[in-house]
Amino acid sequence: MTIIFFRALFILLLALTMLAPGKLGTYASLVDWPTIATLAGLLVLTKSLEASGYLTHLGVHLIALMPTERALAFFLVLATAALSMFLTNDVALFVVVPLTLGLRATMALPTTRLIVFEALAANAGSALTPIGNPQNLFLWQISQISFGSYCLSMLPLLAIVMAVLLLMTSVTFAGRKLSVEPGAETTPVVSKLRTLSLLLYLPFLVLTDLHFAVVALLLVLMIFFFVDRNVLARTDWGLILVFILMFVDLRLLAQQPLIRTAIESIGLAHSPRLYIAGIIASQLISNVPAAILLAEYTKDWRLIAYAVNVGGFGFVLGSLANLIALRMARKRSAWVLFHAYSLPFLLLSGSLVYVYLFMG
Image (cartoon, rainbow, N blue to C red):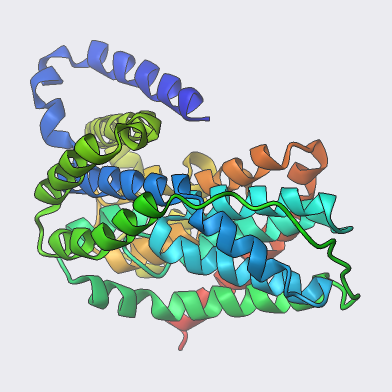
């Protein structure tokens, strides 16, 4: 998936460079480097925690305690949402979806439906914090406010989308009892990686909150270089390249007279239009590019954040987390089932958020 986006963005960059070769020297200045540094540091720390096996070990034991299908669904939804707040939505899915798939050997479950709801939960939970997803990370950096202030700003959105999600979960999943086979295998825990990841996490966030993201990244890279270089080797550096290209491409596009005229004609100074434009743009180009593009035309980072986080629901392209979850499901039917739940979810939650923002 990363390769597909990289290729598309690279081809677009070549085209834009041919249109204006004189701007080549400005490309580095178009990248929001604190955002890139924070994202890179989080990827390293979450990869270390994932490689330690601790999350999988903990999850298997907790899931075994669930008495009914509905209780299991609630647990998986809430666990995915909670992990997404602090480990990013992608990492949460990389932890929870394989766990869900692994449970098929021990009990009869509607696995595909659970994965669809985990994708919705990853988008919902990640909306709260600056580090929950890349669009929040970017908007947090340009907002120049504290970690806690950002979370407080996003709390009403989280409350609305989680209420809708939990209501849909209670209606969708049955209350039948589950029978779990004893002795399920768990991943062995590497204590060194688990401890190191947890110890570094808070200092990294504190340094980032104090606007020393680049320093924080360098410290993390140095520590893992000496402690466990395999973590650095397994980190998805391709994703970092994708985001660098995304910044350059979208900011170059925003400078194009035709693009600027077309977007300005929408009237983004009118808040309801900005909200709707963010949702629609997310459906077409995904919510991270939508956030970067809209930030070129308005300083209302909070409304952009509400719009593009809601825009992560709906069509599968709305969020990269959707694509990750469905690819891991490995069933064609998952794509149809996803839209059967995600499109109504977008309409309902998007409408409720609109009422809160503009009619409350």
